[in-house]
Image 1 (cartoon, rainbow, N blue to C red):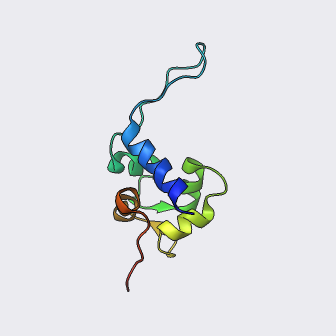
Image 2 (image 1 turned 90 degrees about the vertical axis):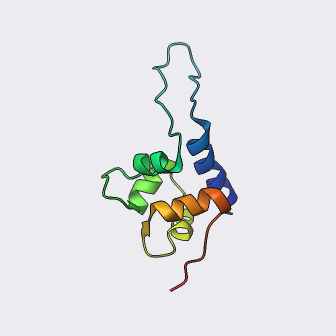
Length: 95
């Protein structure tokens, strides 16, 4: 179930190129080149953590359960959690 979001976030982080679908479309925005840049884009208020609302706004509706799994259930996703997701899938947090 986490594979689609892993691939989506990885693609955002590694693709780096967006292609306009129509010739009259506005110029594409630069895509993040690294996990850190992707995290900065997702972190809308730039407080160093991503909350569910920011994640869903960036990734898309219906991703609340994916956020819960990535964030370890504490309601906050860190850069380390996003890096772990992109490099090896969701990690289980130990207390």
